[in-house]
Image 1: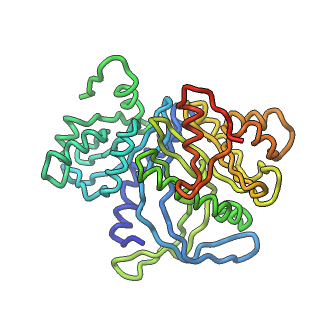
Image 2: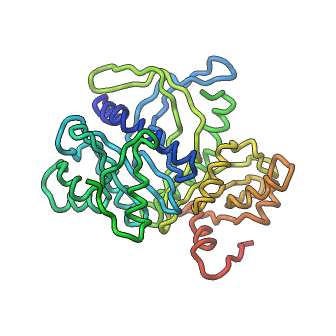
Image 3: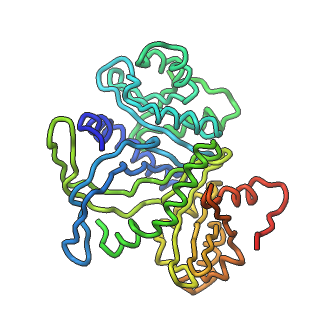
Length: 188
Length: 188
């Protein structure tokens, strides 16, 4: 069971970004580009009722802490794993928005040869960045700060192009970073 | 919202096997062998209440149809995706136990270069088989039968060794099938 504060920061956080990513994943799926799904929110069911023989209704349940990230799947044979976060008004992304075990999960995926990262959308400049796990770990290991400034995303992250369809084309970044012969030039 | 019949066949089905697979996945995780998690059961929340400012309780919710399989993750850099089913007393696995869209999902993963399969445990001989997607599709495309007989699993599937730790060592089969130089001889 998690608190209402955590509920708000987890279950409700980043709804606009989440919606955009879900639409993007649907686009990838419909066009056979990648198979990436959002995991359901973990819920512990305490009581169910059977109003009739044909249906079941959950009458009491609690949100649980997710044990991994929200999104995973496959692109060009590679395992993809990430989480997505919004930063409403700050100029930095507070690490309190992501759990230690989620960082550990991203790290393990990275070590096992998967492609893992965070997508962080800053509203202050209306820009979404893809930050690879190695650069998240690099920040945590070398900085004392508890939040990653937007400048770090500018320097080590990759801007994700947003448009109508697909909304937030993060696979394009993955493509350039992991499946391109030529070195990736950041879009300014 | 799904019916109580589907609830029983989905949410409650295969609890012993599910428990064994969860323990196996924990073993793989603890020993840094593979990172494979069960996805949470999808639940649509209709009503929540806040008994106090620190907690949130779900007061009405409904089970939803899963859009993918139950398990996915990464092993030796490869994307792994599967579902697990138990056959309590029959000598064949009824295809009605798996949804068309789940078959489609396994097929897509296979086509995108991932490793996808079913684990089916038959109680009649207390044996768990790993059946690769290509062989599931092969059966569906070539047979008119609505259930896959145990003989098909004997012929095209791979027996999974069961022991105390890990409970159901399916990665060993994956290893032999996908990461071994020598051809795989089935254990009889």
